Length: 449
Image (tube, rainbow, N blue to C red; front, side):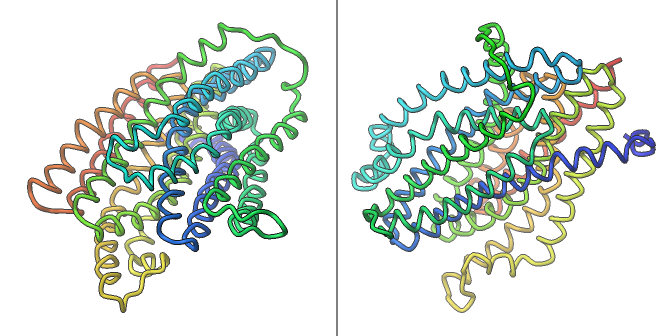
């Protein structure tokens, strides 16, 4: 890595990675903003509407994000094809990605439509289950568009066109806010739909994003021209993509279980966890985008057979992503109280004061794992650029569930550390993932010729 930093070619690679990652990060933050808008709008309707919309939205988006990992393989193969100068393969890869997305969306919609009995089985109240299903049975019709969006985002990133994704995401953020207000409250002569209006607004925004990006994609040369479906390409995309989906799934479920563990510890713990994890999730969007850029840049150079350039790309990604997370850790350590107050907590209220105090303790732990969180997602992206997805999925699973979860349980419950013990388990799971994924990437890239 030191050699890469001293290379005269490192500066241009750093700029190229930044130019790819910055729009992707802004697009990710815009998507978080859509969720925040929904929460704020639903909060005005009261606790019941917020609970139904929050649970329905979380269920839907968790499943979609995991399954979008399948089509992330489109970007990997497109980047390799571009690097090899084999642009003729790209239309078939894109078409195969859209087919895979459609085939994935169908069972997802069926699962979501019939989710009610599962909610009852795990003990959700009947009224809440009814309202959650009312929300989900509107939002689920966005699944095809959402899966196609995953293909579009992966493809456009690999084609060095990330600004399209960013521009459409920002426009969708604004449109979603307006539609939420109009449909929830029944403005401009439209019916008052309550929390279902929020689901409808998200449905329209997601389809609108997909259509807008599709229109923009017509300007990309490789998208033009007919190409038959190549089922071998679809199989290749599945073989490369399913471990990515598994990796995403084990991490998301790991943090979801952490939230459930906080629930066992009481309302104050849950509230503090939600505030602290929201801050950590926001900073994570930047290295997540840098990891996507590393995926593309490393894949492009490997496709071109230039291993030295691939190493420079990975180094540039680590400098940008880990550097940002180190700066974020400093800010979190310097201003935990001020960050907690951003979430509307009142220090003069005794119950809120307890939450603020716990948030501040959790943010200290968050500052510790910022760098590890950035390093693990960038390493995962760089490994995908090498077409290495199966072993990283196993390593991530072991890090979170064989290291992080037992520590979280032991410290949080067996040793009585409570919420901070759970969070130290989450932090050490991320640290383990960062170490093993980085070791694997640098070992693999070292033996490439």
